[in-house]
Amino acid sequence: MATEAGKILLELFVIFAAAKLAGELFERMRQPAVIGELVAGIVLGPSVLGLVRSGPVQETMSTLGVVVLLFAVGLETRASDLFKVGKTALLVAVVGVIVPFALGFGYLSLLGQPARTALFVGAALVATSVGITARVLSDAGLISTRQARIILAAAVIDDILGLLVLAAVSGIGSSSGPDLGHLSLVLAMAAAFVGFQMVVTPRLVSRNSHLVDRLRVGNAPLVVSLAVLLGLSALAESVGLAAIVGAFLAGMAFAETGDRWSLEVQTRPIADFLVPFFFVVVGSRVDVRLLAHPAVVAPGVVLAVLAVASKVIGCGIGALGEGRLSALAVGVGMVPRGEVGLIVASVGLATGLVPGAVYAMVVLVTVVTTVLAPPLMPAVFRLAASEGSVRSKGTHPACPSLLE
Image (cartoon, rainbow, N blue to C red; front, top):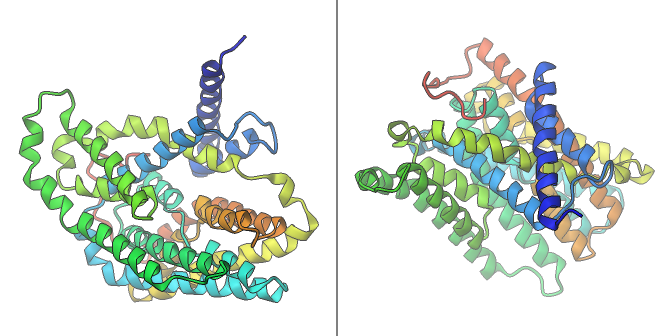
């Protein structure tokens, strides 16, 4: 009789093998591998085959996958590059939060839902799933473009704003109302954390890199960078941000010295192993049975259309200074909601402010935006490039995109 450890190992094998097979199949169909991994998760999940459970081991592997993914993206992103697009990214993030929130709140209000429920749905449409966007951009070799840098910087700001929106909505949903003092503290802590990691940490790493070279432990640069990855991911969670923000900032801290240590090359096998677990687990959370309910499908499809349009239009408006096609590329890149929207909706579901049917609508939005964006992103980036809108630094020939 199989032990619990044996069952877990077998499930991890099924997840990994299915992810790679599905990714290969979709690559052969000229579609991003990430779509195949998400579809594999849906098929393996509880609502179809039931081969993937929701447990601490699966969640841990998923978390490790997404933080390694964002660390890899950070290694290809220098802080100086993000500062060059800072104003545009800020405008993209702010407008890209206001428009989805307003449309989500307004549509649920038109459906006759209580204001508190509408507020949670609006909040669920706010945050971009940077994990999905980053994977697609990296796979397509687009991570070094100016548009990609705008998207990544905006996604970091987006996460902070999304955190504040969720805190405010949760406060409104409680009997005591929102705590403005708490919101101010959350904003200050998040901004201080991101600012310190973007300005100070890369300089500390650069100035003290010679100390790492003196270490006797094997693969010292990789060991140190992975330790910083885990530390900053945990620290980001402690200040209320997502772990992926800390992971991205950790990678960015080593971007200046990564070439000398070949960190991109050394990290690639780790990413190849861990990243698919994240996308399969995200897919497994989709309950296709809920999506077949008549009270969910029609309004859910309309909400999904609004979710896509709100990011394309809102973030596109913020990036209009880059040109119309570049603005379109940025808007499409900010479309995926992924697990972020589900987390927000889950908070409302747990408090009783979001009914099951409305939660299922948010699930449908997650599925549509997650599956729709990956094939669209490379297409709109190529369209922008055809008119000379995409400005790329290029990728070092010896160190291609980590996740290609």
